[in-house]
Image 1: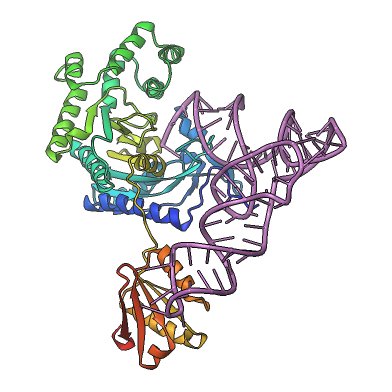
Image 2 (image 1 turned 180 degrees about the horizontal axis):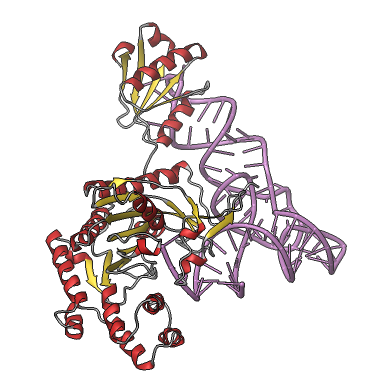
Length: 418
RNA sequence: GCUGUGAUGGUGUAGAGGUUAGCACGGUGGGUUGUGGUCCCGCCGGCCCGGGUUCAAUUCCCGGUCACGGCCCCA
């Protein structure tokens, strides 16, 4: 039997309707905030993703060599492509840029629940400003989306911290630069791995036991008060987060947010606020994640531009929505089914369908000689509102019979007045 | 990379060492009906592949393939 590639999905119309519904909600939230859509190729040069920090994402590339022996990869995330686009027009684009996209992204890894080799990842980014209001605006986009699909702050929480927290703590311990990036990648696993495994990994980087202790206790902090008393009022991390939380308060979305120092994110390029959304029950993977990445361009050989953004996959959110009973029942969206009840009237039915279509109704014309029984069943299944019957007697009088499938009401209508 | 479970019409499933392999949806033909959604009847269509055990395997065993989970890890 013909099968698709492992870890990929087919979208039958039933599933495609849901996907479109989800994407429409992505679009709406972004457009409401004045973002513009962009796109880029799925295929990129492999080197766009081969950073040195040892991140998993670079090890899970779906890559190959093309016929010209070029090393290429299916994009595992959108940010590098976006960075490439921004970089090559950096002088020409009016800043700040507010762009979004819903790219299909790929990775080569073992498949699991909520995790295939391909997924769609809503990306929302703001480039060209280091104002904290940009980070707050992104959270507003997120919350607008959640509200749009019917989720509440009872269902999920956006946990937030800043890379600066770790940067300060590690900096005071003499851990800086490349070492800092590597530490972040390990520390990001804190929630998922036993403490001693993390300690071991940190120790193997050459970090002293006392420093490891400091790191672990810092990451356990779950409220701003404790952070303040640890780092002091003047600490850049505290100043940044305080002003961010104040902005989120002004948006009226504070109930969705919690400070959590253990949020670090596995990608090396983050520099400021970082966040993840999780279901409150804690049963699912992270729903989305993002943060500020002001230093990305220099790693790609360009001049840095401040940027902040998030990625939001289509799989985990659908699982959460299903669990909460928020997945809508969608039908084809057809308004009318048009059927001729005799072979001689098929051209007449085409004429009727065209007339209806010109008024903006979506019309499913029955293309074969089908029985009325079939047409009713078909119309019901597809969720059409009306069945339009082209029948010999009525057609002689220039009329068609229209049955409203919800009310059962039936009328003869002039073809001219359709 | 490690590991568990599974594989039965197009889809979703039931089942037993010897069965006409059952059911629902679907497709198709018909009955009822207003040429008419419900309802009723007929028909179409299936045991993943290879090897082994056995008088007999779709069923038990081994291997393969594929699927779905879990671990590692994570867009």
